[in-house]
Length: 325
Image 1 (cartoon, rainbow, N blue to C red):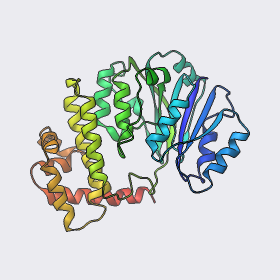
Image 2: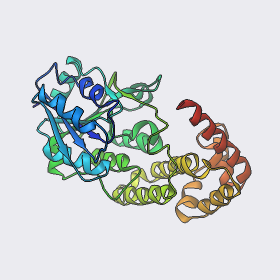
Image 3: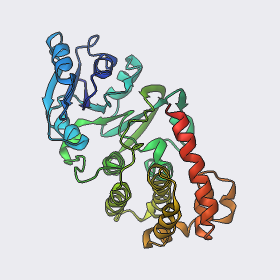
């Protein structure tokens, strides 16, 4: 088997059939699709089993609740030389002969494609400098996690995952993608980019990350500390990891603290900025970063201009809401 596509499925009756068909499983008998029902209460199970009846390479399984448990179950069942992950409301694209040929010529490596996010093309191929240098690529990933550090849109060697026992950390509720990817790329001998869109990501106001969760900050912090532990033996990534922390902080602000705009929001912003891990990370932000949109609110936080930083985060919440309508 050439490729295993792993799809966690939870209450996705409107999109699961489209996701399965996008894998090319009906056109290529060297592709298997492993769909893991993750506690669905709608018609998801029935639809998957209906597709399974018409193609023996569509495999149905169940796991304990949680996307990490579902993906880990898929890894255990996979038979393909390569693994890729697909969310049930998204689609794969361009799994053509060019990609197949590329995968055939790579050993213990990672292949990364461009992707569509809504109507925007995220061209990782053009964004990435020093594509032949794994260390440089990992630094770029850490500095721009929202673009790079998704588990989907990438192709992983199954034998490397299983040999090194790389699995999703089911204790993490957020950034489990990033943590899995970091552990994988630290073991990679080669990272290859393909200048094609291989994935179509659906911007959804119903996604977990875009929904308010009072535990979100605690969960993001837990992931930050775990990734820090993963990188302990690699001092060359220390500065890039600090930028990763700052980018995660931006997510906390936009997806949690300022979703419910009230007097407590600025209090929470100040409180988080005073934590040791944030203080440490804020030290790398310089005045020259004032023209860098991602770093501007963080620069304001560093110099205690919290009201101005809060205004930027409020605007970003409004913009996010517009993008997902």
